[in-house]
Image (tube, rainbow, N blue to C red; front, side, top):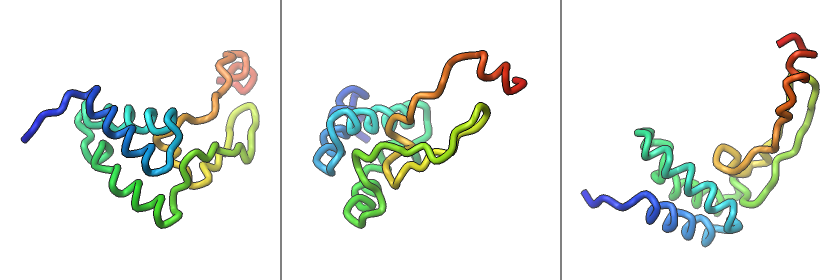
Length: 107
């Protein structure tokens, strides 16, 4: 089995994802997270997914470059619709880091 340095694999995976329709930043984020999955031993969630992601894009199941929409938001919960984007790989919207929000909710 050939070993590929992680940085090279990130670059290759990002190039493939970009060719599949993702903007460079999204492609790089997806690539880093897939390679990170491989590096920690979760190969089923690693670069093995690239082919399936591209298939899903071609079939219209995944939509690259689609930001999530916040459907509902309160002090204690938010419901976010990923809109069929690669949301498990791409950045999620920022969550408030203000501890007073948690205190107000009793946490």
